[in-house]
Amino acid sequence: AGSPSDEAIADAGGGSPLAGAVEELAAVRRRYARQRELLLRLLKRGAEQEEGLLALRDSLTRRDVIIHNLRQDLQKQQQETQYQQELFQLQQEQLQQQHQAQQLQQLQQLQELQ
Image (tube, rainbow, N blue to C red; front, side):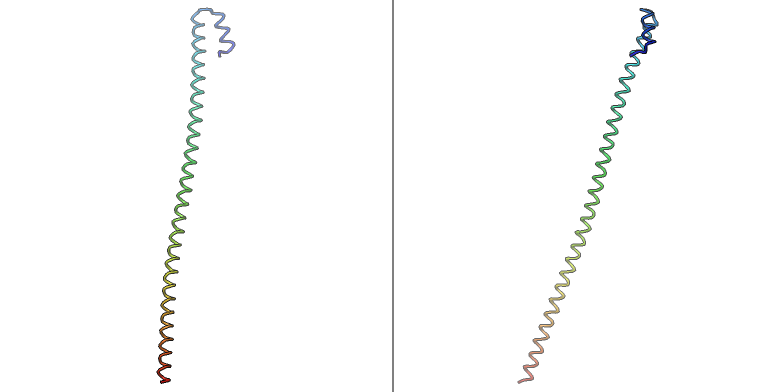
């Protein structure tokens, strides 16, 4: 709304050009206030959207880090499994060699007894 001095001028002038100018000034001020309010709402909405975007980016970054860590863990587990398999095969081969050596020794002992 207009200031008291604007209203006093409008009342005093009646239908004069000054009164019309005061009314136009009041209308301009109202439009300015509406546009300012709209701008503030848009700026607030834009800030909220930017905040949401940053939160989404943070979530995606955390997800990517988790995926990277899981892939590393999987690779370590696969390497450990391969190592265990190779160790098991070596132990099996050693047991076979020991068994064959025992059989050979028993055979030699039998031959000595004959």
